[in-house]
Image 1 (cartoon, rainbow over the protein chains, first blue to last red):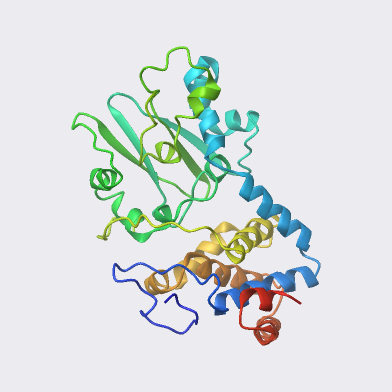
Image 2 (image 1 turned 90 degrees about the horizontal axis):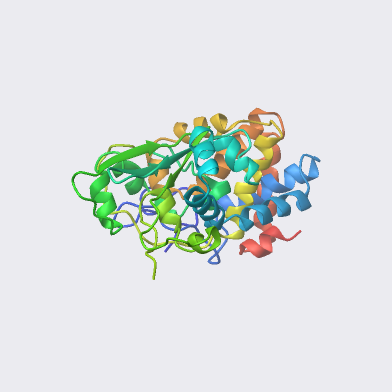
Amino acid sequence: MPHDHHDHDHDGLSPSGHPYRPDQDTGLSYWQTMEIAVRELLIDKGVLTAARIAAQIEAMDARSPANGAAVVARYWTDPGFAAALLADGTTTVKEMGFDLGPMHLIALPNTDTLHNIIVCTLCSCYPRNLLGLPPDWYKSRAYRARTVREPRRVLAEFGVTLPEHVQVRVHDSTADMRYIVLPQRPAGTDGWDAARLATLVTRDSMIGTGLPKTAA
Amino acid sequence: MGGTAAGPVPDASHDFALWEKRVDALMVLCSGLGLFTVDGLRRVLEDMGPDAFASRSYYDRWIAAISQNLIEAGTFTTAELAERMAEVEARGQTYADAAAR
């Protein structure tokens, strides 16, 4: 039973030590009540409008890993773009239409001897403009705690087993600095255009917990 | 958190509920207006202590931190918040009922 009151101790904890999902339709929670109250106060005081909040949610919903996939596919196919992306990720993706606001972006290219993986040990910093909202596991205590401690074991849980000679580099995101992993272009895709290549780029391959799909 | 021992990475996922998306939107919009910064959000989250990370969900913590920052910014008072929360709670048992005014 998800927690639906605010004064519980550890009864809101799952057997594996993780928080349960918040209530969605099983009764009003204390924190939902607070959300409604805060939002109404902001609207009543003229700080925000209901329309502006709705528009923000719509913009957020529109972002998806397809944005990041387009960046990666272009990185694979356009050498000038690739050089610019590595030199200045923030400006280069902005010119492609993905404005990160005040945040900075560093693109991390995987190679035959280097595999990058991103995490936010502090909370949930994530390249939202390129990938949408982070998946639950990215925000989980287990992922945040263990990725910096035993990244190869975490990768193995995601089904990614890398040879010993491949170095694993973990990047800890911050509020101001976001990362995106640039996976290696799959073999057998010579002559593919960017749009077709983008279909191989998975969300997890841009976090580093996965690899791109292989050319079918 | 970073570097501590922990169990397997959970693979369950969920669709974000409307209330969670609203919390997220409030954070983006209020920080965009300069009412507080992401550091202000983090400070309150850190002040909650480790237990809050176990017992409260992600957006539970966020709305608490947003609310605290807005009180500190003078946007509304603790009393106004308490009064409005009582009103909201009196509207009904479900989120949909409580959110309708």
